[in-house]
Amino acid sequence: MLGEMIEIGASIAAFAGAAAGGYSYASLAPWSTLFGGALTAPSNPVSGPRQIALTFDDGPNPRMTPQLLDLLEKNKIKATFFLIGSYATQQKELARRIHAAGHAIGDHTWTHPNLSRTGAAKTREELSRTKDAIEQLLGAPVTLFRPPFGARQPATFRIARELGLTPVTWNIIGNDWKAESSEYITARINRQIARNDRQGNATNLVLHDGSHRAQGMDRSFTIEAVRRLIASSTDRHFVTLDAWL
Ligand SMILES: [Zn+2]
Image (cartoon, rainbow, N blue to C red):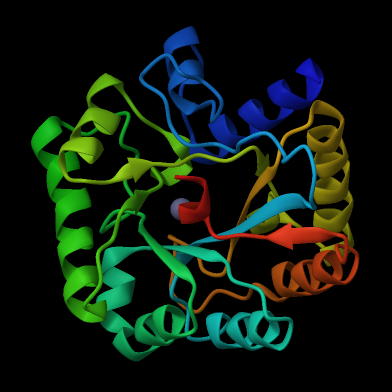
């Protein structure tokens, strides 16, 4: 288990391009509570099906998000989408479609910065501008926030809470942004879901329907992995993150 956690932490740190060091590692580890707690995943219910929250970051992406919405709708599954604010305002109809389909929508900042390095004013602007724009777009409150790369510092979650946002991390990350096949993603996800099952924890899974690097990124491997996960999860219950608040 520890090896797995270090592997996840190391991959996130590498992804973020973070410098090595105890503090930056702690600031990036999704399970770390050093800088204040965040919603990860609850224990599975004693009776009833095990739970999975499918979450998708870095959209809306006009190339992939519609396909993903079709797949979820066909299977009557609700998920959570953490939108980049600047993308949401460029893709208003798509953002509205996500909401109209019954999925939860969260704040993933305006420009996807590494919040372990931004000042308090910049952090507040990134979060509030996105929250305000999406709320205006949807006519509904935005109450969830996920920090890009999971990166944070002591002030980050305090600012989020002051804005009425619950910080959310994850307990499984699919590494789908660097996957060379859908099979890679599936194998990785299944291994970590099995770990969560052994520990009695529900699954809060991060995947990406978009990319902070560019709009219109191909996420076909991700969608295929989701298709397979749904097919193999008939005994599980898919929830949106607000079900855990
Ligand atoms: Zn992101």
